[in-house]
Length: 360
Image (cartoon, rainbow, N blue to C red; front, side):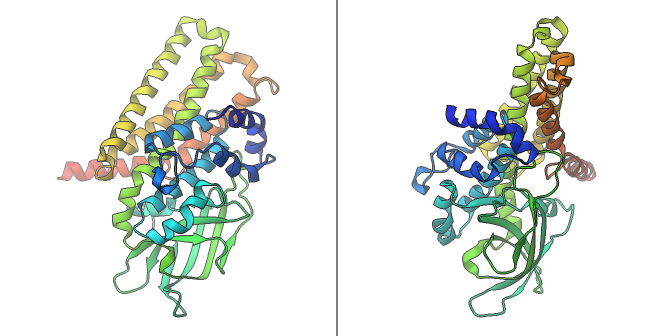
């Protein structure tokens, strides 16, 4: 990450968390630092590298602002959906614009990932289109989506068809399609500058040019490792920053706290190594259990790291002037367990898997 972006993040992290910062500049700043293209092949307009490199980019941003990292995650996750789509025409139309920061990408597939695990039904329905150009008419809502830049965005949505077979497809939904309505930003307690809002979808006519994949049950498992792996970058970056701050504090020289910080750093490195190994060998596509476990572990480590930072800083962490960055990281850590899929949802799915394994 460039020194220019680091400085900008440090300057605006508090304001972006509070919703008073320059949210509209985020995507252009990220694009100027070439972060959206990391992990995208050069022949597609990207920077090359792997998903691991993209996770590290998100982690580097999260160490300074989880608000911006959350937006980058949503944007980069959508890029990965376009990469994995068999719709070459759509890829040609939007991918370079996404990488250049001209168009905001958003992952509206939280509902779909929970659907895949049997946790909830889909919130968007499709019927045959009302004219020859439109293959489908969509109705429904996406209640919580990040990086919905008011100037223009494109969001992925899982759609349940009302035909006899009741199939499920994944669409790219452009913000300028008639019938797409973005709500005001949600009234969050943190990460308020992340352009997180709800989307109402009313009689939206879409043709096949907007189809990411026609079979969700084949497509979602293939993109889930990137969806969750990139999301893990949020916890990785936050944990690293809090452990760094804890190590710098004078009280960290005391034996017990030093041992705590060292142990947390060792656990973090171990889980990150396992995450990268599973992504590299492709095993998460067929067995998501270890990926779920690592997502849970990383969120827990981030929370413990922030607590270690508090112990290291002592009362100074509770002073408004000197503890502002710590207070923001504390709120950021509290957000990680509820990012969809939440830790409760992941633990529920792991319990179901264990029960099925036991019965078998």
